[in-house]
Length: 292
Ligand SMILES: [Zn+2]
Image (cartoon, rainbow, N blue to C red; front, side, top):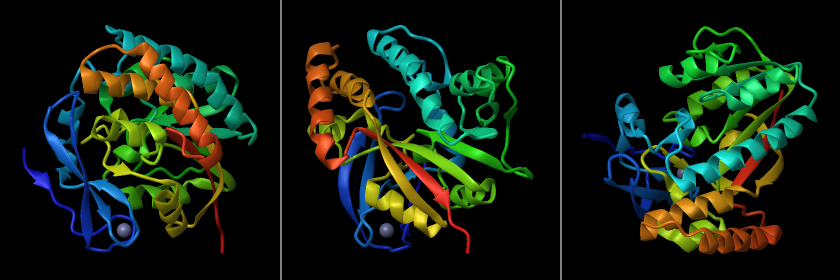
């Protein structure tokens, strides 16, 4: 399939990049993709990458479970277990901000959305993928099919592992700024390529997930993007369960086997190193919009 070659860094617009890593798509196409690093701002991104209109075909696999509910292997069962644990934790995080309204941007099959609604929150979602949206909507919560012509603002907008999939991060950050209330919060969860598990697994690190992941943000590069769009980073929080799940999946890519003990140890190591550096496998950024 033909690929799109970016000639300007999506974060700082510089045109000089250096090769960073070659990573295989283990779940769908089995093709190899390049990740490059911007020489000016160090942003890591998949380049070249599929054209936006072709991205959908890279999600067509039984293996890609955030959009479905199938689980036919042990790694998926671990994912589902962790997801249930994480739901409550995410909800408690949001509750602290006492939002009257919540938008889950890229809500997938609507697990988080449904959980928030069941707790009495006025929650809605946005999901461009029609099959996932149908599953989400069947749970009885409103789900937008598009973000165009939406004249509404929300107190909290969440993007749980969504922004790394989006081709035009600048357009989306602008949209988010316009659709968040003055004292609202934007919550963005992202994988962290500076984590111990990323450095340990290198090209096998499951959270590179090319070409579905187009951006590979670090604390520095995400802060840069946020500030360019008038958000300030208020807080960075760890997602401590992700290191275990990502290690399980990475070991599967590396050895083609199920390695629960090895993965558990790598997960523990990752969290332990991150205790000092805040470089957890995944991070949650809490952002506030800045007003002139
Ligand atoms: Zn750059």
